[in-house]
Every structure is written in C-alpha cells, then in structure tokens.
Length: 115
Image (tube, rainbow, N blue to C red; front, side, top):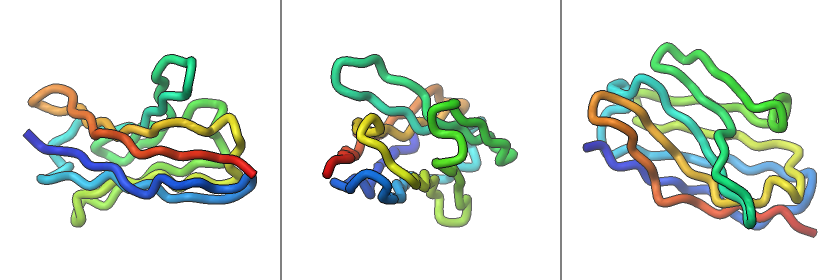
C-alpha cells in the first residue's frame, strides 16, 4: 500500500497563503483520483478539492477561486495551494488517494488561520 504524508500546515494570518504537500511512498499514478479533505472543530470531514488520474480538477464552492489542487507524478506529490485564507478555513487537512487497493489517508496537517 502507498502511504501518504501531508506537510505544510501552519498558523497564518487571514488573507495569507499556504501550500500543502501530500507525499506518497510510491507511485501516485496508480490512484484513480486524489483529494484534499478537511476536518474543522465541531464539523464533519468534508472534501475540499479533487484531482483525477487525468488531472481533471474539481472544487467545493467555498474554495473556488482561492485554492488550487495539483500534482506532480514524477515526484509522487499532490499539492493544495491555498490563497486568501479565512478563519473558517481553520482545520486539519487530509490527503486521500483512491486506487486499486482502496482508499488511503494521510495523518493530516493542521492549518490555523488567525490574526
């Protein structure tokens, strides 16, 4: 099984930017699709953005125009560029991959947006 590890979470001020990275222990080419999810305090885990094997992307309305999902298959990494961050974006962000072996999750990286 391919292991996924997130990094890049940090404390940032409103309006700031962060880039999250999901690093896979093996080839991400085997995943049918990958996604970023987030879990905010008191809320259910929700999908933020997805990217297919063919690099087709999809975003939830609350991040459209602010977040960009991308991947680099040569580096076995997926990214989430987050711009114009808002306090309501504060959450644990998780990387997910769906492939022949099922669904894989990372351990999460904390993003806190606060002044």
